[in-house]
Amino acid sequence: MTRPPFFSIITCTFNAGKTLASCIESVEGQQCDDYEHVFIDGFSSDETVPKILEYQARCAGRVRLLQFEATGVTRAMNEGVAVSKGGVILHLHGDDRLAGPDVLGYVKELFDGSRATVVVGNCLLTGNDVLKQTWPENRLARVVYKALIPVLMFHLNPIPHPSTYLSRSVFERHGGFDEAYKVVMDYDFWFRILRKERFLATDKVLAIYRFHSDTISTRQMELGLREIDGIRAGYRNKYPVR
Image (cartoon, rainbow, N blue to C red; front, top):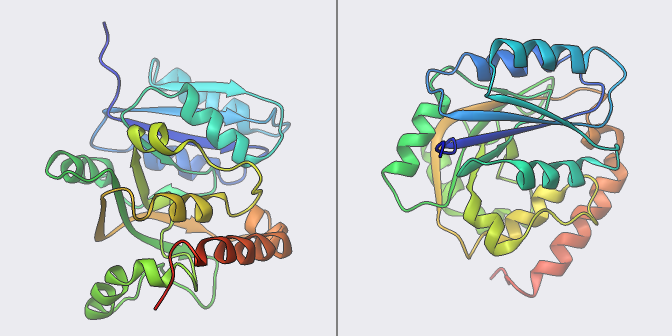
């Protein structure tokens, strides 16, 4: 029996051809090759699928493409978890990329050397004139920031999904992303698992997130803000901030 890969990288796409090449290059260039790359595509009509097929031809056996009706990214993310085989899962969207060729090897060492079920790192932000990275640039401020994540959750989302790796067991215990949320499904999921799983936070930048006009969070900003307000209200009684 073939051993399952350590990582399953899940990339959900729908007409992501403009940005997909950098995402693929960042994964294909990893020094650690103990991964599979699973694409969940919503029947793209641009160059997305040809680019995935070219990648698949170069990396036979490691890249998979599955297509489902485009009913929302949340469902696609859950489909990716369901069909993937790796023990550690990363959702890396088609407009995001890994920060360097050593990222997967570094994260694997963290999982191997700890009892963590979730590893989260810093994330660089491009295309935003105000925010440059998820966590503060000052080292001391980052220490305080990481220590206060449960409190900060009620003011912002300090856990960037492209820099967050989750053991498959996390999904087995808590289920997938709530498909009632169309924009900030990850924010709700972090609340659900925050005080139930073993988080390991690292200063290292693990991913690069790209702001642009076609991202879901930009196109559906008003819906996202309403979802955020509802999530915070729902968890305030469960996790009271004193």
